Image 1: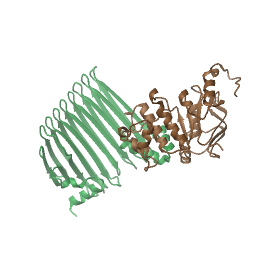
Image 2: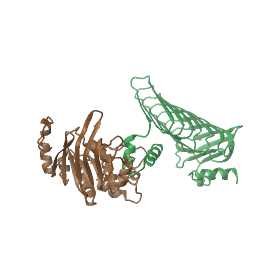
Image 3: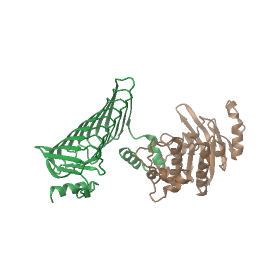
Image 4: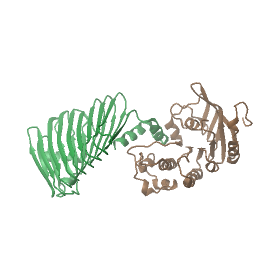
Length: 238
Length: 311
């Protein structure tokens, strides 16, 4: 049974249909990459799964561990083991990195997770999560914090954005850690070397999944840029 | 129990370090109402304090070249349910002196108490004063607090202040600080207040950047809930070449509370620059959702955010 199953969802904002019959399944322990051009709704899909305010499928179902979660609130989904690292993590005044990593569980060792995300614990534990952190630093701390939650399903929305090229391996290490702990990962990315760590990948276009398979296959299809010349009338994968 | 013991008991319960009283290397001035209970000066600092009809009048001098290692503790309280306490402070930091002051203001049972602080502070050339004022109020809200300070900072001087009122009911608070900043001098005015019930908060900070290359920052963080009201006015004037100022106000509003922010920036020298930012509203939705994605309930998430900004 898939851990996450998205069944034939539609999602409309005013008159615009963002998703029209999108289906996707993520197995336990699977890393599933989501590819797609800007504006195809990758982040919207992440918000729908996480249960952000205002993001409820118009029709269709989202199931977690076999149970429909459409109307569960965000924190109720988090209690089930779903969490998310936003593309642009927010900053917090007055909250130290140490406090942030131990928000839910005071017993964990925050150093372990900072190390995992490529940050030296002694340099970061007492830093405040405010504007004094660079975008890349904040991003890594977010990855460390979701790893510290020991989630069952983690949604990573472009975990590589804002991260320098030399540090991509740190992101891959975090994703590998999730996998080794049996967590599933819904991995939204534009970068091929990140997508390649996935077990499977899917491409979103025109409100639905148009191509699923190995990361190599989906990346190849994505790079063929067929979507850019598509007028939405036919697609061999739909 | 003596008045001093009682005040120190309240001080300890509010998180203060009672050992300061016995430590001969720490200067202090402790008063309940208009009665001075204890005072001590240390080398490099002169303290003259008098009891007046309705409070205390104190003159403090930090002597030239003095660099105090230990904080100077001021402890002002009204232990009764009602009363008035008027504190007049005349503080002078002589040339090249440096000291940290902390004022503990304790009003645990206030039902009808008025605490007025009127301070004149003069920071000499290359002198530095750091002043923290921490209030511990009871749950009744029957207190009126009016801190007023007129500060002037000489060449290369520094003045930093931090006003904290997050324990107990605010009652009615009316802060009025005015700072004149000289050449190459720096000031930073911080205030953090948490209002509840029908508390009323008025904060007015004014920084006049009169000296060449002077620097000023006004930073205010207010959280209000229930039917509390807050009005924050941050005024910064850039009056000299190279002066740089910034006004930063954030107010978080819950329930039926009402907040208002009035940043006033005025520049009279084309080579000065003053900026401002103000954010008023409910807790940031994305911050809230991020914390909830970490397993916190909405109430726990709001609490973490509010405590963070007031920290």
